Length: 605
Image (tube, rainbow, N blue to C red; front, side, top):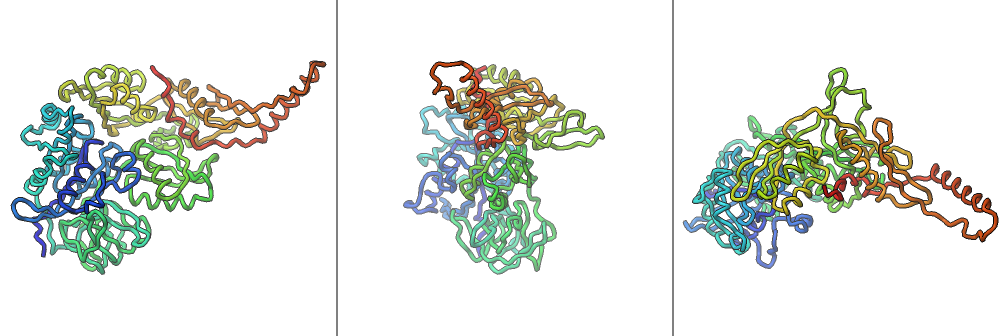
């Protein structure tokens, strides 16, 4: 019988690139969890894409055993979490499985937007927070100012913070002592009815669906018959185990522990994140609270480059959904791209990562259409329709009003770039300035209300450029507001390509339409005939770019002589190219569908 008072469940939260994964590396080394010959940087970031980009995308659990100075050996279950705002749902799920958290702040960068957002998530979950200032070995580290910022923004007193360097290991042993003494021990009755919360899952070719769980009450062992409380489905457990950080089988998992359950579940939807697992022969009375369902804010179409790969894409999305509960998809079709799926994401980085993971992990060649937000249309009969695909937007006159989502945007930036950021958001992004707050020495927190759609068009890059890389931001959907929006359709070789349609504000329609057709034309290869790329609004062409034709010099053989001979040859060539254009099939390359993302990058105003 294990001593449950010696178990601690914690997560590590911070803004992106503040050192979460590096701290996890030092803890693994300090507790000898991983052999030194196997150890490498960002050990818990198991995906290639995480290693390459230097960011955490998936919450990763690991169990370590720590020998404290009080002579006791503690079991600490750590969940390393992402830091980017697009993956905040991963953070919220991880926090629900813990009793405490380490709030990590970079001493050289100070408190940033996601630092504050994640801290409030921890407070909402009633977790014990250990504030830690990292990178104190950096030449530009400013510990005192960072402590002041923590006090100004979160009310954390300087004497409550710990000082560490995750890179060198300085202060990490002291942090481990704080974890075992400040984080409360686990609760829950081991003799009670099994209640295990699924906080994540993955698909294994041999084990099927593997549920990552935190056991809140009871015990589960290999051979038990378990039941999913949301669906009532029953499965026999073939393996239970722990993360060290590789999956290692054990005989059983008991209340307070974090581990995994494999139960021959072959369908991806059989283990839903947030569901409660109980025993079929002695079920619990009610499930655990679970999570608020994530609501996608950006939508895009995903289509296979080869129509034959449709089924492979469907299976890939099913398995990916298991690994990413915030991702949504539903079948869709396009006249230009054939059958595919309309997919929902939590942000642009989330979308970019999903597409890249689908291509890498499932060997799929995917075409992604331009991202769009969710619009609400009020029809003449009072019905409210949600539009996630501009191609499905009704014609003008079929609806009375159109509403778009607005976000509460928070930007923490140095004071010298405050004016430029306010001007940029108000003048170019249709944003409204709300308030400003002190965020420490020479730093301010700016609060705005702005349309979510404006964040798609080269927003993050511009903010970083204006602030010379020092600004950080966080946002959440606030409400919907009525706007004057129009649909811009695209014609290529006079044929509509609905997958390239976008919805924009009427004040920007000419500028964006002109830029878009030029970007698309750049991506289309030249043919033997001229290809017009046109933007259409309300049936009227408002912008055009032309892909020039390859031209053969048909009059090269004419030396002098009557001009009518040359004119006859040129007329014959012109008629041939006209016929060729009518019969020609223009293939739109993959890059053209994301041309919208580069709109405005050449603009300096």
